[in-house]
Length: 104
Image 1 (spheres, rainbow, N blue to C red):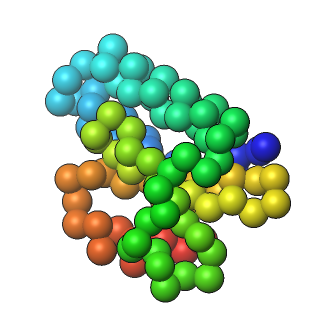
Image 2 (image 1 turned 90 degrees about the horizontal axis):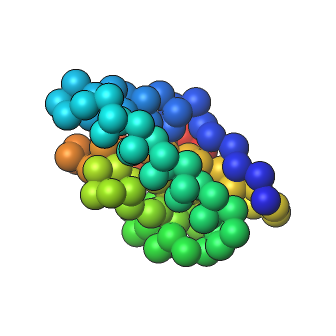
């Protein structure tokens, strides 16, 4: 399976990583990004591990999500042999607002 990231999801992931660096340390930021990579690898092997996300129930695709270290939420859907990372959320923000901003 391949993974394709929405540009907004990439930007959100980077903003969270930068926040972690500022608030904690560069070492913690690197560890966080490694956790994101590991989750992405896991999704490639087991794309159905994420829970169906109720915030996207009104969309035509089935969106799933996984939590990464309690700091962020990776929202994705699977189509054919491709995993599309549609959104990457900071878990400290309002979920309904973030779901409304997802375009994929």
